[in-house]
Image (cartoon, rainbow, N blue to C red; front, side, top):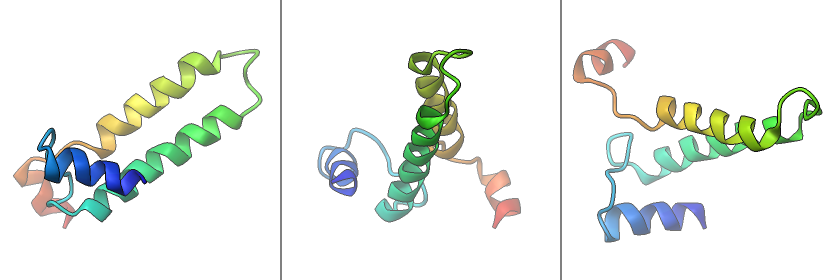
Length: 80
């Protein structure tokens, strides 16, 4: 379902460009990693210290900004 939504909003409707050279499956993998990390943060028993209503969106936003941005061409050359 997640891959279908990525394809709908990127390919069909054109709301955003697919990260990873236009590969929908690469972007779906990145979204999956973000979801997995958010799930792990949600399941940690630290709700007495940090409220998970704040920590989960914060971690998801940071992970999304790291994994879903397009790298500049000079960095892409070094990472390949």
